[in-house]
Image (cartoon, rainbow, N blue to C red; front, top):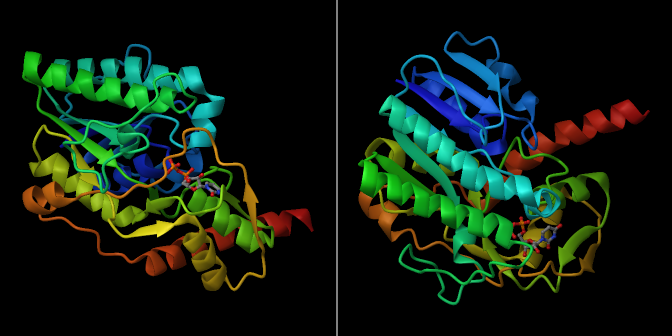
Length: 317
Ligand code: UDP
């Protein structure tokens, strides 16, 4: 196969590139490097089956040759990013998805949309099955991401129904692991980097809000199975083990052995109170479930950030 991954220099995009290359496929990676990091692809730059195009996918995408798959992962994905880049976030979810779908049509390729648990907003149903329609403020600051992804899902289903395009929608729940940016702003990377630097861990609100954290390898395995043998209906992929944000902070302190304190900071607007995926569909249709515990996943992620923080320290001295 030859596949296109948009957002290839991002955290998830780059892991996806690795998995397709490891399976012997050819991969075209695209990224405008707005939030993507070229270092995430440095190890495959010379790979004979990999090519990279620096491109903004909100404008017409031109690709020479055949494609069997288009996986649309381009988007700012951290709340901090989409607050800073609201228009770009809306454009890549809306215009970028349109361009990527159009390309998939032209190439008769299978299309996979990276959607998100944010389509459920601040959920009134818990845990969240795919049948839940969500509780999203279209005009709140997070609406730029949530509504762009909801529009992207609607557009994907329209191409599926009207053009008979072979499509998949993965609703990705909080995922963490190596290659998140140290300044990404999301909770796992923030806490680990803060702990390693000896800075206070910033818990937003009182830390009683919950998330369910999935290690990146588990997520990528679920996405590969969905791409290969899933259906057009949206599928939740995430880890159903739910923790409060304060529990996560305590876990990170214990695993890093850090003496950092925990401090409270204001809760962002529209921050969901709870989040946990109902993964019944993924279990049934893909035979998939996550395998890596939070403790094991955090250990691997801490090891990754230790190298980065040590490098920063060496540069300062
Ligand atoms: N959060 C926090 N401290 C941080 C970063 C995030 O307490 O330094 C909280 C945030 O308010 C949210 C949860 O952790 O309740 C997860 O935030 P994240 O940005 O990782 O992703 P979200 O699930 O909100 O998209």
